[in-house]
Image (cartoon, rainbow, N blue to C red; front, side):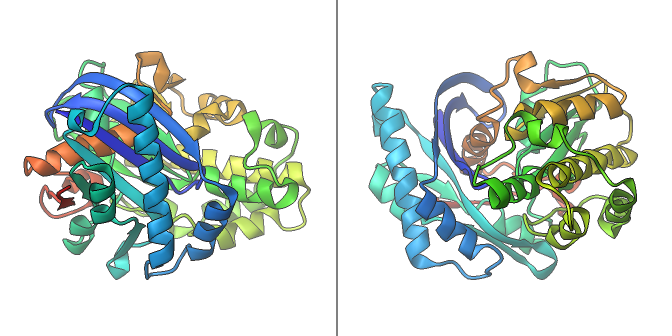
Length: 357
């Protein structure tokens, strides 16, 4: 069926929408896409809700209505109607993620979205996994594996969003997958740059490239227990805020950006210790792949080719949105959304909440 996926990530940059055709196992066609930045006021409202365990009803409605605008625009621009779409995968906006406490909060009203769009909606993808003892993240690995089916393996798919996560895909079976959050990615850098310049991010990594790194501070940050903890493991956007403050204390804009970028790269390099076998190559998705300085730094340290997922024909700006379209279809068919190797859940687990239009 045709499925529409909606993703708003921890980088808080906005919402990505993508349409794919899938049976929940294979991707048979790729459809139109749309990306729209959050208005400043809505982004600021979301920032104020980060780390809060309870959903703000007014914010939930605002986020949902913003998604409805995107759905309407995507369909109209491409001469589609609600009858063309079988299901919407609505991730919502993560504001709190503490799986050890049984907490994962994605704000967004699935019933309101279904009623407003006239299309059935699946949301709350992570809840069942967390309730079953899983990490609730990362949640795109099964989609990565479906896309990677024709590729030489093992391969690593690295997502550089607000937090970085990696999917290692082996060659033995469809479930030969290991996935986990490696550490921070764009969120800390974006926050630092926004604080000092008002800009949303370090375009191309140019600010970081002009700075220098205090190796002693970086080593102190990398001594955090998270980096030696065996997967499964996942992070909230704000988990490394205190450590980042140690890295950037007293730093200039450039040196702070350089330190936070180096922290991201070092944590990704450290993740290799958990792979059953080193990958033949790394494919990078997420907004961070546009950071040329970070990509160059990764290529210099990962001891394998590093390239954007675009090099194999994947749509890097919309991979996460596509993933939740894929997972929504899997939810309809009662297929697993997470595996022991992706979230640490005890058995393959389905999930999601279905809202009829």
